[in-house]
Amino acid sequence: MPFAATWRLADQRVWRYDGTMQLVPTADTWAVRWRPSVIHPELAAQQTLALREERPDLAPVLDRDGAPLLVAETVPQFSSTGSHGWFVGYRGDVAFAVLVVDADSSAPAVETAVRFLTAVDRE
Image (cartoon, rainbow, N blue to C red):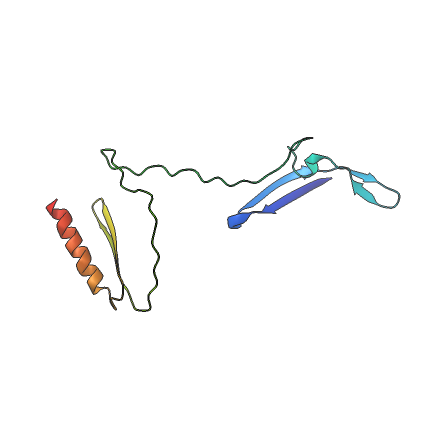
């Protein structure tokens, strides 16, 4: 008898496949003849099925001379009750983001970005 299996995994991932199982009559009903392939079509005797998540190391992000642009760091978290000023942008091959905590507007973030870009221009 054909069947369709759907496994709902972490992170909203879904694994689907089709298989078959053999039904056999018993005294008053039908039963599935047990085989590992009832779980998955490629599963054989003495095999198990397991799900393991492995996160690969990230590929390095390097500049054109091979120097690292990004390195793994601990990211601090904070909380505040005030308003914050944000400004995000890019110019040429330079991208930037500015956050000024308790700024009440984006003006201080824009001023900081202007100072940053002026310093980049001097390099």
